[in-house]
Length: 237
Image (cartoon, rainbow, N blue to C red):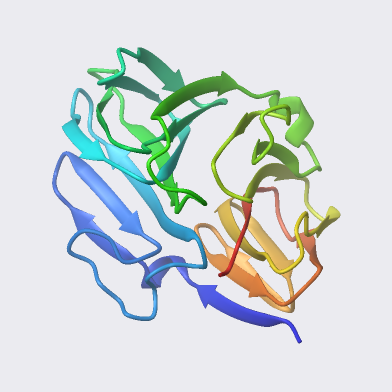
């Protein structure tokens, strides 16, 4: 029987550091909730707004798959592998920290804020070689559709990570109904509303609300307003 966990936007962890306004769907930094450690292998979903010219200085990660999705503005990246560049809305950054990597992320603009989602997935193997990828996705393919942007397959749409996990983005017109079926039996679905309002599994979700679903083969989603959504399919165990 399907099981649900509801994460309301207002119930997330929150910190305002002046240069960084951040909301945590799961326990992170100084925010700790024993009921929100992770959703299966989905460990972090941070909703960050960074002030102009500010950012995260060089710091280390290991054994984590890190996906960054800018929502507005532009983010400047540098890392210990020699990669550097700027990512903006319509692009996605993927980093396998693996055996260890240092990187920095700064707002590229001196005038405008940058808004982004940073997502961490626990990998299916440890100490892989660090890897960086950045790509532009076709936003037209997200219209009234769940368009795959991350998968385990190197030959799939978008980019790939070291986990049996799939990420999809959708921009839905009001009253649009779409369906999603699991790619891998036993996985769970974590649905995050970036903008708008939707109904799924007898639950209404508004901006920045999220719903985790397990023991279901798929879900149906109805847009109650113009809506942007992120759907993450991820192993539960």
